[in-house]
Length: 313
Image (tube, rainbow, N blue to C red):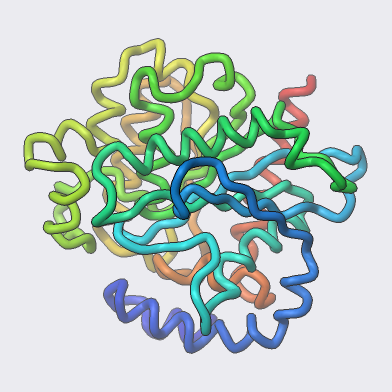
């Protein structure tokens, strides 16, 4: 993690190379331990991008495990639930790490540019969650620990956090019947608006390709959805935790801070704001399984478990 800190001011493309050079060899040395976690793949929709991986805990005190969906980022134009070789342990390491923490972890692909437009990824993630709930018996078949769909949590990073926020802020998108069983959202390094003082790391061409015109962007970005959401939508939101990396990209830190502040104002409740110590925008997920920089993920797992206990009281 010292190498990560030494390059804390680098732009995101440089962060990618630095992070993988520093951390991926450690992941590779632990491949067997990462891949020993049981994983099954399911198709939740029509295309090859409509697939999800489930990572199963080996044991829990109750024989059940809360469900944690993870939605990766990639600027709306890249990302896979398992990156191609020679980096194929990412995001397998994320699923394995949280499964070891006792969470049934789900990583779903979603459509990316140029083969989609707003709100396709939002609908995809909604569909992945609802498919999982409706097919829980299939998912749990043969598993020693059963995924508990009474306790669902959704975590997103970067544009993944923007997608997650949009799923729950766009009226009529998420089923009202399932909403009470979604107990929490974890939004990390979220790209929630693009009018920040600092330069936005996503190219304008990608923002236009996804959101549409400038006027449409101003209406469709998560901060705008939060501003415009009917009060009943806001009050129905599950508990939210917002995180940024210690060495976060300035515009991402600004947009996450703005989102958290407005969410607190609209709900009338404090919104947890945490920091991923020692990390840049890119490094938190690559670090999982290395034995370094994992404290944030343990905190998230504990946050999830605490809300499961709270819901049962």
